[in-house]
Amino acid sequence: MLELQNIGFGVPGKADILKNINLTIKTGETVVVTGPNGGGKTSLAKVIAGVAEATAGRIILDGEDISDLNITDRARTGIAYAFQQPVRFKGLRTRDLLNLSAGRELSEEELADLLRRVGLQAKEYVDRSVDTKLSGGEIKRIEIAGVMARDAKLFVFDEPEAGIDLWSFNSLIDVFNDLRENRRQSTVIISHQERILEIADRIAVIVKGELAAFGPTAEILPRLAHGPECQSCSETCLVNHEGEEVQ
Ligand SMILES: Nc1ncnc2c1ncn2[C@@H]1O[C@H](COP(=O)(O)OP(=O)(O)OP(=O)(O)O)[C@@H](O)[C@H]1O
Image (cartoon, rainbow, N blue to C red; front, side, top):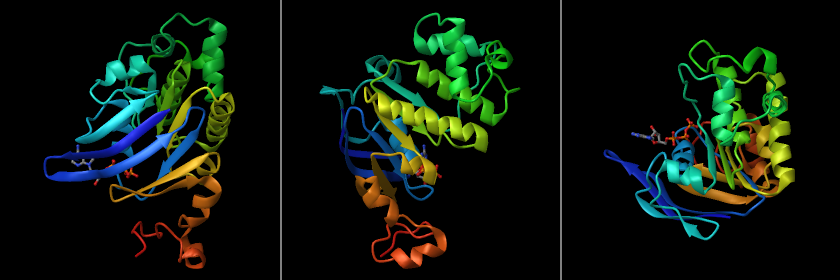
């Protein structure tokens, strides 16, 4: 279980990127974090993974206070994080990246299975270098496969849909559904995609650095803006289609 207690995050010149965020994500639960651009979702993902340091509050994973741990130690405690914009590694092949993520030598079958789950064929990708020659969508999928290779307590995916074509997107939905059915770990997905929102157990909405709403999908989803439909839900709507908070 992940507990975020009064989390704040800021940088010089922008002190309140995140303000007083309180969230509890149960073991086995999938929470999708959504909200308008610039609201603070990526910052929240980075603060959870230890890529950025919270300026206030505590982060507790399975009862252990991990607030002061760096990214490597958080990874060791069982947090697996997929960046919004994955890092490329010159000289490292896909198989090396997956083996590193898994912390062991994966069999050819395991490698093929991980790649298949993100819609890539092993024979084409397993020995390719994870460098700038890969497309944005390819690198994103390889990174997601790497995260899936981890035996993590908590998975954090930042906009996994970005740059991914419709066919691969369907495989991605299957990946998240599998994770959800496993019920062994908690999953946080930052997303704007309705089909990803639909598979959440609960949805958190971050607007202007604050938690505007957090609740079961059936309750929150109808309150999110859908362009013109916004008019029909304006009383309870959380964000309108201009991305502003409804007053
Ligand atoms: N290191 C930083 N320095 C200055 N401003 C930052 C920094 N990190 C984030 N911000 C600002 O904080 C706000 C929140 O950014 P963040 O990337 O967390 O938003 P987001 O909700 O993920 O947005 P999007 O949906 O566009 O990906 C933005 O206004 C961003 O410009």
